Every structure is written in structure tokens, then in C-alpha cells.
Image (cartoon, rainbow, N blue to C red):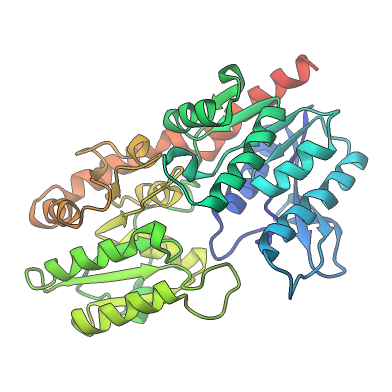
Length: 395
């Protein structure tokens, strides 16, 4: 039996209850690998004395101690790096055959410290797909590139990402395998009871346009607000739901300057009851929002994959996404949704009109649910199980 340790980020505790795409990936992968006979364990952090072996819903988790960093610059980077160092010490004592890392700074620590076991690295960083990035991202590319070159295998979420990291990180293309993110098709499904959520957010009798994700500039939420402001006079039954954290980082208490700007814009430009900013929501609330949404929109400027698209599709909800990164690999135009030109508000408005004006919404929603089967976690875990086995055979 293959033993695999899958490393989380060290930033959001497992199991994730209010978002965290990498953490969802780690948790679901460990869960489904164990169902397939792989001895998989998640490596996570703890900021208190509850360290060591833990089990949540029969999913094994080993928690390593990571101190709280209060007054340190770049504390999120330092926290992730310290987590990687502490995890490397733990991994020396665990009986595992393969180590699977998922974030830049923790992955760098593992690549630097552990050289006697096969390292697998999943690249979740959508900015590899961009040609122009800010200075700090160039530093991340140096760190993440080193980790990928040291890894025995690299997981790219789509063909576009594979080409980008081969070219920009200088990794051997023979080491890069395309395995997309997965989705829990039993949890995210159509027809979920959601009367409580409809009452809470005033969605009765409304066609809901849904955004899910952190409210940041790179997610392009302002584009959706502008497009929505053009649609409201024509469709009086619309409601926009912005579901996601308003702070700059997980655990932040105050809305970011960007989020505050959006809320002020909505207050001035939109009818009072036509929108709602929910802030962070739990996954039970999220599955209900997907189930009742008329369409889910992801207007990002950069996106490695777009896990929210899978969750929406699994819930039978049509999707619209910008033509960037991995989104173009998920959305089949006219089948499960539509794409629009990056940053183009008018094109987004046109695509929303196509779904709102026509009679195709139900058909697209059904097709989205059919397409999603190829992204089931069981299938994704099966592909990675085969990869782990091959790596162990050539040790």
C-alpha cells in the first residue's frame, strides 16, 4: 500500500469551513485516496497545544505546531514557510512513500529540507499563466520554480498551466502531469432545500446572479457590479449576491479598501434591495446559494482553475467566466455556460443577457451537471493514485 503525506498551506485549518481552495483540495484528496486504498494523511498546522495525530470524519490529519506571528512583516509568508520547516521534521518520522506539496513557501521548505523521498507538487498559482506580473510575484516564481524543478512530478491543473510552467519555470515537460481540481458531486447538487437562505438574503421571487470568492481586484468583482448596474433597469427581478470574504486575507476582520469601494459603488448606483454582500459563508450556505442561483459569474483577471465553477456546475447552475487561465478549460461555450473577454464589461453584459433573455438556462444547467462527472473527486484521486504508484516503482 502506498503511503502519501499531503501538505496543506499552514494558513487555513483543516477541514476548511469558510473557503480555502488549496485546503479543500488537500482535504478532499486525502478523503478519497483513503477510500481507494491509499494510506494518505494530511499535514496541517495548529497554533495551540493540540498537535499530533487527529482525525476528522475518519480523515487522518497530523497537526504540527506553528506559532502565531503578530508583529512580523510578511507574516503570512513567514507562517507558511515555518509550517513547511516544521512539517519537514514531522515527515522524517512518518512512514510515507510520497510527499505531496501544494503551496509555494511550504513547498520550498520541503524541497530544500527533504531529498530522500519523492516530492509531488501541485501548482495552484494562476499567475503563472500571466505574462506581466508585479515584482513580488517574480519572487514567488523563483521560489515555486525551484520547488517544481526539485520535484519528481508536477501537477498542472490544465494544459495552459502546463505550457506556462514548462516555459517560465524551466521544468522538464516529462515531469508535468495534467490533473484538474475535483468537486464533491454529492455535496454540491441541484435541488438543495434553501428556503432559509432565500429568506435570509431576500431572494424570494428573484433571479440570483451569484459571485463566489474573495472580494479582491484580481477576481474582477467590479466588472460584475458594472454589468449588473446595466441589467437592473431591464430585469426588475434580479438580485446580485457577492458571497465571499471582504477582508484581504483569511481571518481578517475589516473589509479591504477595494471591498469598501465596491460597497459604496453599489450603494450609489444600485437599487437598495437588488444586491447583498454576504461576507464569508460556510459551505452549507454556499451549496444552497449555488442550487438556487440563476447563473454564477467568475470575472477574474487571473485564475489557475476556478473551483467555484465546478461547484456551480455540479449544482446545476450555468456559469460565466472571463477568458483567462484555466477558466477556458472548464467552460464549454454554449454548453455549460459562456466566457467573455477579460475586463470587458460590455461583453459580460451581453453574455448575462443571453442567459437572462433566452430559454436556454435550464438546458445549460442540465448540461453543466452532466459535464461535471469528469471532475468527480473519486476520478481525480484515481489518477493521482496511479501517479504515486509509478513514482514508488522507480525509486
